[in-house]
Image (cartoon, rainbow, N blue to C red; front, side):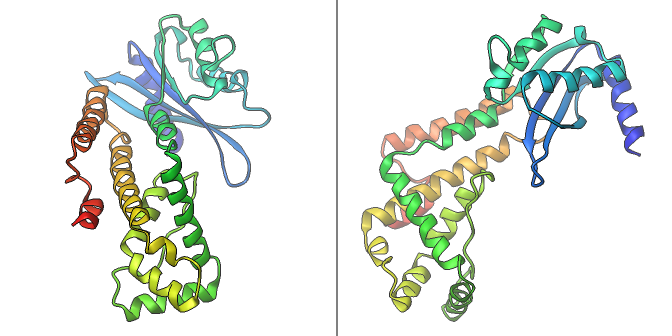
Length: 278
């Protein structure tokens, strides 16, 4: 079945007057570097987006190694470089380098190809930048979660406490830097369960009470939970099939318009922060 799907996609690409592709290199749980390639092309008067191929990078992951894998696939399937109109990559130097980057090498084979930087990757880099005060709040939240989740006894006792308090949730969530959305989910869960965590810290006599008794810390936590919830929502809107630059731009502009309202003092869009001020 996979071979049949591959032949069907390749045949449609060959009939298309032009096509673009996106490459992404990632290391899996077995420390193997995997190259993923997606393609967009014209078929029956419409634009289709499909997964093209996946290949393991046995040695290094330099631009020449990535290009060699793509060239081998193009040669085996008789795809023409002259029909390539665009290539999208992340912001790694191996991809965007002006002299030996992957995009530069692709333009040598297809001078008409336009190189672009993945919008989601750029957004993920921007979302890592936080003021020092907010970054300290984030670190303290991760410390609180790790203290409760690191030991099985604490995990069980905290779960039982949440049951006794008729809480909506009974467990906290871990934050993993590789998973972009996890940061917002962790912050939202800690804010929702702040009363349960405070009670648990009092029972265990853990030195976490200064956090929950600090009005600035609570407001900062509420703001972080809100802003990352908005960023997570934007992240999901920037993904998926059949998305075009006009839609992506509208989503980004909508977030910027909300930012202007916040600068003017309107925080209605931030539900958690509004509830704290109320």
